[in-house]
Image (cartoon, rainbow over all chains, first blue to last red; front, side, top):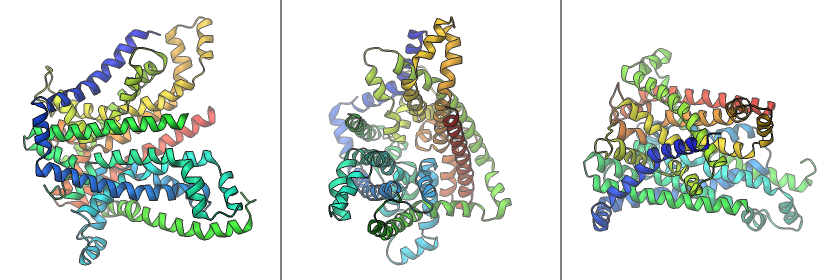
Length: 262
Length: 270
């Protein structure tokens, strides 16, 4: 086959679509030196936005990890009626637009919805506050941990677990000593993917947060709001931090995958 | 499975029931009930109400643009993704592993950052003599960026596994490279190309963050469906937003169902 033209075409496409834009943002960020970059990041609103992103990420990753491990064990190790349906439903969030996720949560947990109204009367505001943002982030990243663990759990098989069981280990002991070490790599991979999604989520969080500056504004919402207000310096600075986090996460997933293969 | 000891089976039944109940409740509260609420809300005014809501000029234009742009983007991805996968598998050049790692960047990068990144190169303050900002082309560019990995990552493993004996046989029997590609390689890659393009399509119709900045989201011109939905939520029209959302969900559902069929067929014939 015509090797060189194809190579040039592929690389040119990647250069124009991927590499040049990213490099340009990094260059724009550090155009006025590292000092300006640090200044842009240390405004109260920027710090607050990172803090909000951090707490949303921690809660949603925690929830998805617990659910992911539990669900994966149920799907692989147990038989129950309706298993195929549950299995298909887990992937549903991947087909839903983040914006629709936001709308869906508002329709159930909003102030004027029955459930949301009841919760609010009992002192828990979900929409336009942190719980709603956590729910939205859990929704969009729900399948990631499950899907990372299921194939590894299938591969591992049940022999060791059954052996532990016959030797008198309790279910918890079996899980902690046998199952968990076996799925550690996959679990790490799933958690890291989930973290990336949680840090970067924009659409779903934009809809349920109400975008209140200094209150429910996450780092991604901060980028958009600052850009729209012509404060490109702050927008680029926070965007660069988010991009660096993404690159770091990408490297970690590559490492985890490589370990898996070996 | 039936050979499990009796005691173990009984113990599992209780544990399974409890765990399953919790998991299904969690799934219902976060995913199923809210999504059902969207569909339910969209038919608030019956089917007539649904169509009136979807038929509003701005929403209808946004839906048309979204589906059209996503279809074009899926096709471009199908060609370029396959070429990139081909280069990554069959070619060798210095820095190939870095290029390979770069492919996943659009998945890891927050979509709003992707939007900003594209805006800086293709927007009004671009160092290049191009300005795509606020044009319909910019919708396509934004969608191409976020969907880049799909076809590459579905075709790549198939290409790696592909037996080269068939190709070599075709060559030695005098087939031209183009013929070999069309008759031998393409049929093997087609299922992966289609499923990659289908996934790219479903991702593209859902996209919000990346298109928002670069396209300016001008109603009737560059506004995509997701942006239209947000507009209708913010102007206190949840029923209209739900109607557009339901249509978007239905399109995604049909495409995914089609992909499932393609995969089953190729599994049967493969």
